[in-house]
Amino acid sequence: MLSPKRTKYRKHHRGRMKGIQSLEAGWITSRQIEARRVITRYARRGGKLWIRIFPDKPVTFRAAETRMGSGKGNVEYWVAVVKPGKILYEVTGVAYSIAKSSLKTAGYKMPVKTRIIYKIPN
Image 1: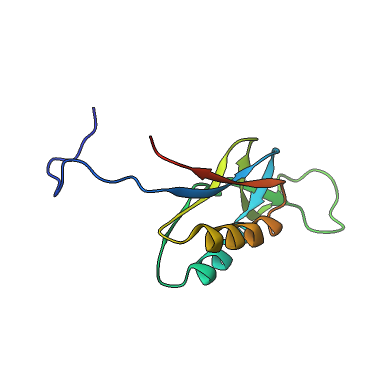
Image 2 (image 1 turned 90 degrees about the vertical axis):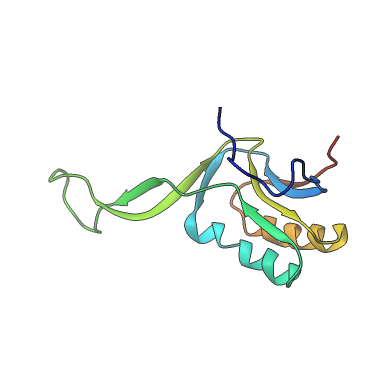
């Protein structure tokens, strides 16, 4: 079982988490993941942002007007494969109104339908 050897405190406060969740499947490119800039711009200095997806699937393209055969094309960009229910971003340490407006703006930049979630720890 994994655990740290030494911690400053035995237990931590969890705090409230706000986030954005995908409602449909799709590919999100590394450029679209950069929508986090919108969230950080709204949050300013306070708050913490987690990016819960990582682009680990390469997408290849052949050059235009190329004949069939002679191998696979070069890697053009990388994507993160997203399924319904996957959390894309999480934000904590900012007011709910600020988090909601920043996540809503980031959701517009996503190629899949998203919704804002709000989790209260037990």
